[in-house]
Length: 403
Image (cartoon, rainbow, N blue to C red; front, side, top):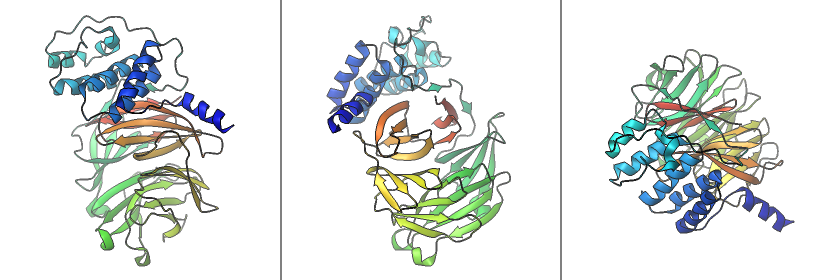
């Protein structure tokens, strides 16, 4: 039985050894017309290879184009051009989808070639992945972009985004319709500490929960802020009790019952603020290193990202169990729950990807891992219903329709 499960997982999730092995498997998948597999394996090759390897980057660009991710391919080709490496993107039929994009002429000029006449896009794979997402080609652009963004949240009622500006210790609003950027709340008005580390919207109750921290080592402390979502007015501050210091809050999530949970990355602890209370309580020690992201499933279950992987937290039993997976699940800087899967942003050095991790009925074992979008820098994202919004590049928010 164990062998059978292992074989099933191997089939669902591509695995490879070093960069060379990943590249060879990726090329085999491309030859077989399995472009989703081609994409995932090419992305693995880039992760495992030396930084800025133009050959592996070109392999990934091909895979991005053929698997229906032409916007990602366009950016990757631009990065290759920045390295001073010439490609055949202007004539290679694998990049037909890329050459249909409005931004292609700008890249063609960068490559020093005249844009080739648009050629028909290659036919879709005969057996498309049933879980492949649809990424919108249009971006919500805004100006000026944030130099050091942290966090992203979407307010569906007012049709606007909340973005954190780490360097300025403030939150800004990006209007979904007008694309205008306005200041929302500053450290001076809200009492944010030196390091703005995360925030989450409680759409049901119209609140915005923000965590910030200051100090280092034994002097570190943190605070949980409650703001009125509509106005940004401060409603509550829940500082860390003196007896619980030092600590640094790294992430915040709101459960369906209104309880707010925060991760202490310094002390590896989980804190909670119950509804209608003003004092944080420690729920449990997590005995994990590098706590980075948090997702709420319901009033009894959370998922925590740490440097070893993902863990499922049973709040009633106060037990955290690692999620079992053949592939590594490290580096998540954002995490959300949707329909039996975790969706988040997984980062490796200066690269990142939006990943969906499909879990079994018990929520403790991975049955599939889908790389939805390969982004090119550390970014931020948020789930809003069936749409995942993410910062695609400086000054642009894109949407990913999950099916």
